[in-house]
Amino acid sequence: MEMGCKMASHKDVEYVVKVAGTLEEKSFRSFDSACAHAIKLSLAYGSLYIDIRVYSTAGAVAAGLREAYRLDPDASATERIEVNVTSWGIVV
Image (cartoon, rainbow, N blue to C red):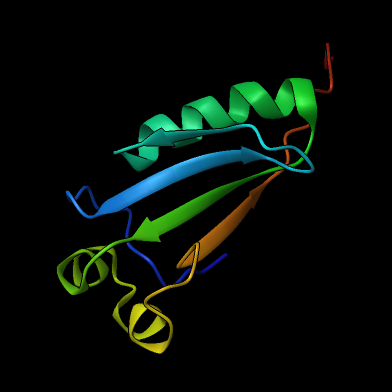
């Protein structure tokens, strides 16, 4: 999968893990922390999202999302990643 974003840490970039179909969400400053939380929650809840929120042009440049931010700087998420984790149990 190729995405248009870099997983940058920047003061104006936030990674928000959202459980699909609920209002539950948690914010992270690093993509790695958001991914770890998303995998843990996905095992319990199924499908969820990591929304990448950008709050400035500098943040958009750092995240590699300059064009998406330019098109709609007021969007609730500049990029959305869907996460689905399946546990297969014991594999022999």
